[in-house]
Length: 79
Image 1 (cartoon, rainbow, N blue to C red):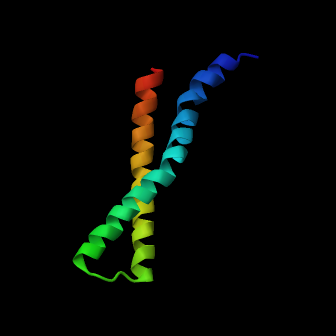
Image 2 (cartoon, rainbow, N blue to C red):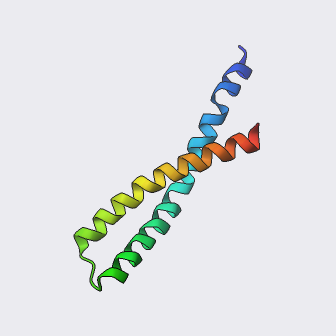
């Protein structure tokens, strides 16, 4: 059985997913903190509902950024 074909086929996507999963949580936290601070600058008190909305917004943005950065990084390093 030739595993070299499977290795070359699944190597980049697997490393891209692993790296993006590792980056997701810190990037989400960083973006969420920046969103909340910007909101607090505009208005002094931020409600719990607004904080949850900002966390969902930060999660969506961090998924996109993590995947793009991981894809570019894996292509630069492994190819």
